[in-house]
Image (tube, rainbow, N blue to C red; front, side):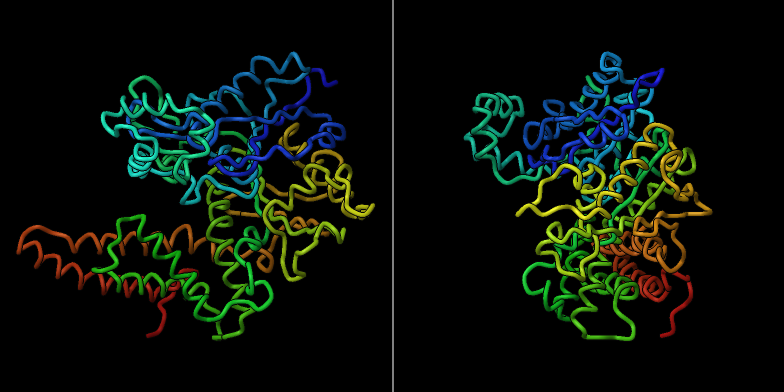
Length: 489
């Protein structure tokens, strides 16, 4: 045993905040081979963990408070298990990664409770990770109706819901996607857990200064995005356009966009998206369009938020970034996965938890020895980070350089384990989603809002503003997001 005790890896499981958080992964191989302590945290989910009354009666984020309590327990008690309370790494995958990100900016809720962080295939900077509490106002009306409660005052609603049996409450509640909320100003008795939108907190520098390991797979949600005929036949042009348009419409809707008055503005935003993702030369090949749509979804939801957080964290602590490109060689592990699919969501966990060593396969099939070697390497690098901060400190002969603003290197975890170059990792999409697209979408929404007024003179001013917006939005559309060159008309 190390003199100071074993390093500790506290994990928040994957799943979602609304009640689906499986505890199916066995950490034995990581513990046995790497000599670290693994602690898995359970916390309240769904209505029990994230219900908010949008006021001080029930501010919300109780599941996150449970996690903080668990980290405090680890700090106070892990020494009894030969653990080192001064070497605690928090790690999460998917929803668990969002939790880790929130603890990085939770202020006094987790002060001095952890010392490193690992985020896998999930980012707190995704648009949907945290919502304003007011978005749940209509959910309160649905709950009151479903259980025959008075909606107001809130105290009566709360008293009524507390009298409902917990199982009945869980099984019969309306289908509401409960999750973390911005809880600043909702309580006079507790410090807010999430004082502002995570993007704002990051840009305000309100991040805990701890080493970070972060990354994603190369085709995160490919299995969810390509169902039915899309798997075999690809995407038609019309469906490709519809899918892109749905995303743009949802982004504008988040900013109180009014499609009746501002439909033209959506066209301008779509032009920007087309510039980045519409194949050139133009093609109707459904397989090419399918790949472009997968790139669009993966880069928007995973790659750009991951790199954005790494950019900020790397300015204050050691940061390591990876992209996972290895699928198992064991055929049965890839059952029903088309050959063209890269590495889907969750598949890196096969190697991280050493599944080739403990998961029995059907029909007495054996794991390929190459998969066991990859699992050994991945477990060693993650454990090295928890112990030493440097993921390649001992046990592996791999060059994994720190990620910095000026040298944003990414380790491509494939059979070669090489650092990225311009051919394997393009940052054009990162720049588009993190800088250019928000400018277009924000400006479009401001132009939409300018159409609303209450006087005749204001209507005249709004008319002028609409024309000005149209001209400026055209300018936005004709500036190339990657090279900042004027596009010919």
